[in-house]
Length: 142
Image 1: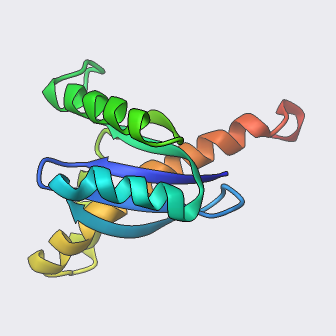
Image 2: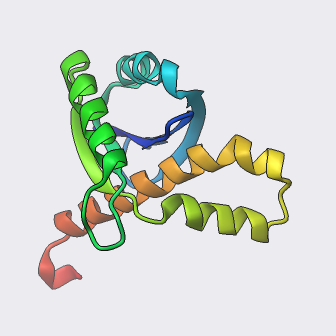
């Protein structure tokens, strides 16, 4: 079952796709927020995605704010329009971590803006995939 990672933003939405084995997330693309629902629906069909992992922005104390509520509404709408299961995943600090990595790589501000959202989606999805792998591994093999 393939998975699609989503980093939902107010202007841009980053997308990442998991491989067929459920081990590796790859950055896919960045779309404008207004186009995200239609694009995700298309990608779910094209890639036979079984689960959409939607980043859920939580406050540092674990509480939910307006951005988390917007993500939940988006997830509910997406779930109604696609056969894929929608799962929320804690995305705290993913975008900041990616931005720091890109600054460290000496990328220009323009280039960072072009890739940060899809790389954040990759981080969200990879974190989720790693958690699934741990769940599938028997305790004696860990």
